[in-house]
Length: 110
Image (cartoon, rainbow, N blue to C red):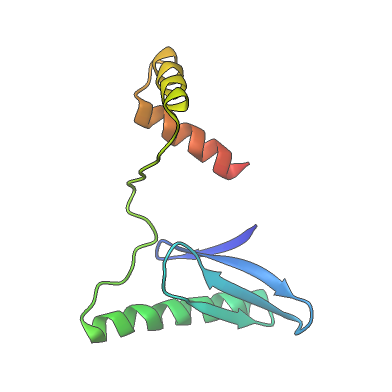
């Protein structure tokens, strides 16, 4: 997956072969922020403008902009998976949180 980042927000980038343009959409928030450009430079500029417009609109309306993530992740897993994860974490000398963060990071980067 191709991405761009600005001010902690990440956008997925795709090429629209039909229209011969790059298209981006900000990930991780409910608000739909999309943008496009014919070149990478145009795409990056459009991303920055779209995100800055979003942040400005939030300020004008007096609402806090959505943040891509809080850093808190709640999961529901079967008890046997939970137990296996705790055992694996303890075996590696880490807390479940540290171990899970490493495993999730590795999986996300794969």
